[in-house]
Image (cartoon, rainbow, N blue to C red; front, side, top):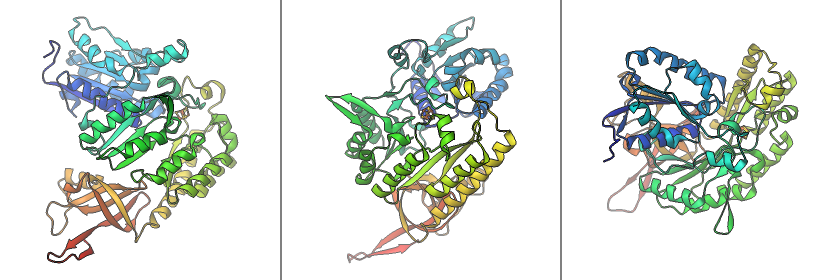
Length: 493
Ligand code: SF4
């Protein structure tokens, strides 16, 4: 046993942001478990409190600073507690964090997470606490090779408790981004685009399959830009999908987030041809007006996006597509806003994540373009976009009523969990253990239905009876075998 092994340490970790951050937290927890830590969801009981942060929106940063503010007095009363800030804010604003929250002990950037166990141990052991930081080089701090090298590679450690469910796992296939959209901090916080070796990825997928994972979600900021030279050939995302299709135990393969310009035909054909591929693509359009796309430096026009949607619909009929939109970006006119709403109507996205523009320091937009749309106008446009999208989503869901969909069961629905927490559990007549469950269809629609929680991790056939804008509501299709005969009767429970 290591001399530095800490027994019964309690770790509290709060994660804000995208799936990348969720995966980072999973890896950090796995590493700290090796040092004897257990997770707690009670900040007061924790010896070490970590905040894995996001810089994409101002709101996410405020949230972290207010969480840190609340800990100021806790730290005064219990100076042995170690407080750490990780992730994108830590990468971007190291000194500002120590300035605004001097009770923070460690700040660790996105590419240096493997340093955390050592930094915590050193902080704990030092009699005179010194603030410590480990951050990757910024874009301008060296050559591309040096900067890339400062973003450490991947850690294969996993922590099943931190996964979305025991049956689903994220696998990072690349980090960083080289697109440099003018509003975005990611190229600065996550560094240059770097793809990961296919053999490493496949090894990790096999380990996850052995642990009972059924669904693999490959992650990358622009996941379909993936490319890696190995064994004398160039590997693409479609090649990874063909390889993962062969892994026994894995039932579903998905990937987020795709970049419109990199949506190649080989990838669409893989989604069409592979039985395990989820028929769902998240391809953010961001705006329906070419002038706004130009100011955002997205590198495509609405016409280019339309051409891509044509190829998706032709190659994978029935494929769901979702988007992100920014409203109230610099100089957005009413006419431009109307064009964004028209694009939702035209492309009929399954859903869209709609965000009000917030200026981020260090971006080209913050440097060169005035954030000139008043907050009340941003808010109104945001609500109008949501109304259009919600109506489209509900119409899209209504098309499923009367059909059957195959669902990977994730577990009790959120409603079910909330009601159980209030002591008001959902009950199902005839099965005292059954409750409302949720899962996702092959085209990524959320489906709720009544069933036994033991179904979690299995695939169930669900008849869709009703819907809302966000959810399909159905009933399990059960089969009854008449013993003594080969007749299988489909009945609806
Ligand atoms: S593609 Fe653009 S928005 Fe997406 S991570 Fe890269 S720079 Fe940011």
